[in-house]
Length: 125
Figure (cartoon, rainbow, N blue to C red):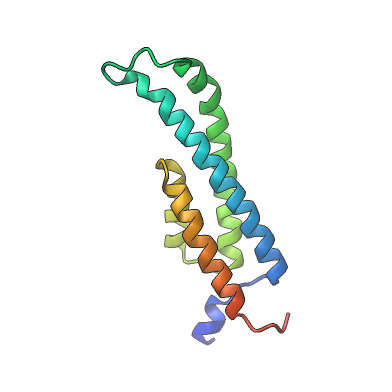
């Protein structure tokens, strides 16, 4: 098996684009949720205990972010298997949803990489 064949996407371009769209939506939703959740946790820092609505935000958004993150893991795995990412890339992409702002960066890099791979793919499908 050639190296090109081993790294070629396993799905049709339309299915890869669909998986990419799902991943991008979840990366942004998870990233925004994490930013708001991080804001609500700032109340534990000295001098910031009076942030407005901090406790109620974290009480509601904590479980919501957790659910969004699990869906992000599923969409990352779906996209990664369709374009044959190495396990390390899938793991780093999944972990990006746990660091504020990093999911946006990972989404940008992954979107660009998948688009380039799709553009370089022969149009036989």
